[in-house]
Length: 82
Image 1 (cartoon, rainbow, N blue to C red):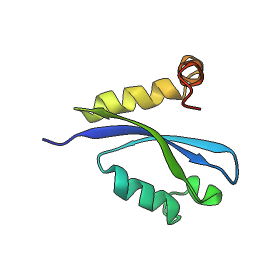
Image 2 (image 1 turned 30 degrees about the vertical axis):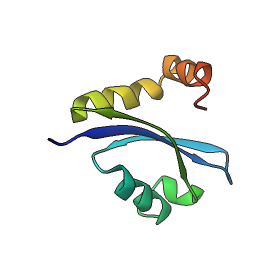
Image 3 (image 1 turned 90 degrees about the vertical axis):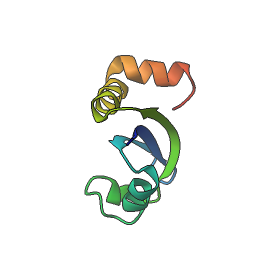
Image 4 (image 1 turned 120 degrees about the horizontal axis):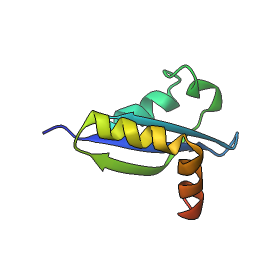
């Protein structure tokens, strides 16, 4: 059974966050730090600061969308993720 992740990366050098979802977290982090992702390549290096596991891609995508919302931003602040 395949699992999916919603994740948050942080670039210390540029004080930026990146929100995403994937089915292979280690590979995706490597892609971000290798410059293979168009947006994130400008802010290398990235470190994984938070992730959650979901049974479906749809659920992972919904959680990513939530994190990108103002309500999600407040949730992340309240839980000291960002």
